[in-house]
Image 1 (cartoon, helix red, strand yellow):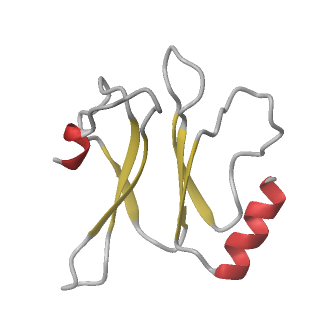
Image 2 (cartoon, rainbow, N blue to C red):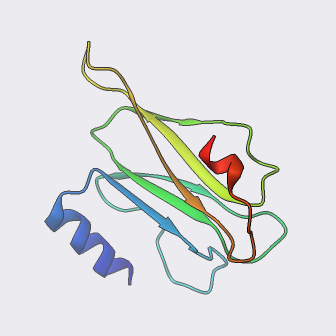
Length: 109
């Protein structure tokens, strides 16, 4: 599966790739990183599943953002991507909402 993801990423030239439900528990033989991409990941603490991952092309200057949502039932990961001078920065993220979560009001705010 990792080989397929890497091939698709390089052929399509994606700048960002967000993935949910990664299950980084060692049961998959992922080398975790991908050539030409920087890896950001957030593993769910205390429960199985729901992990989120964001790959950002390494030529993009970016930093992970801390939005204070660690106590939320959702898993999310956000980065700020620095753009060329005068064009403004871009915030991008990946979010996992568990299927048993009915109220997503906080996600929209």
